[in-house]
Length: 156
Image 1 (cartoon, rainbow, N blue to C red):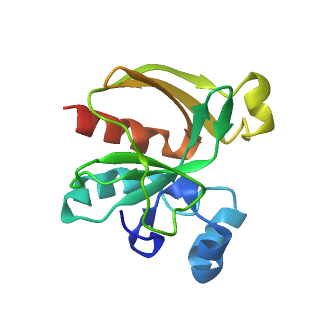
Image 2 (cartoon, helix red, strand yellow):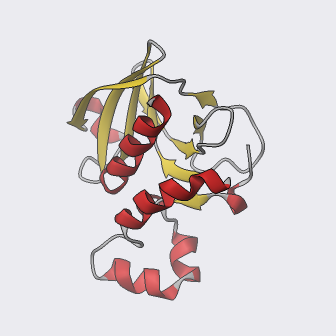
């Protein structure tokens, strides 16, 4: 796994530091839209074959609660989709790979006790099975299409 300096963050995964370093993104966010255009992330997914990974904030269900973490999308890696605990993995470490085939069962709004951990108006829950193992991930609504496209690319 690579450090965060070589990982491109998706539109819904920008940090405060990202916005301060890129004035045009900061101005865009102050008017309401995301820092970058989510459709550019979908186009960038096609270029992931060049070897550059993309990070998406993703909370993963662990027993009865959602744990914050990062989903790394890297189609040329041995494990193309891997979840790491914590907001942005700063060190090389082992993550939990989502192995193909990835079947999406349900996409739903954040509800119940999960609203205490995740902002329900900014996140959406994806219930999947990856190689038969159940996964429940809360990802930013802005990045939903990107994550679904990555799941489809890995599963095909």
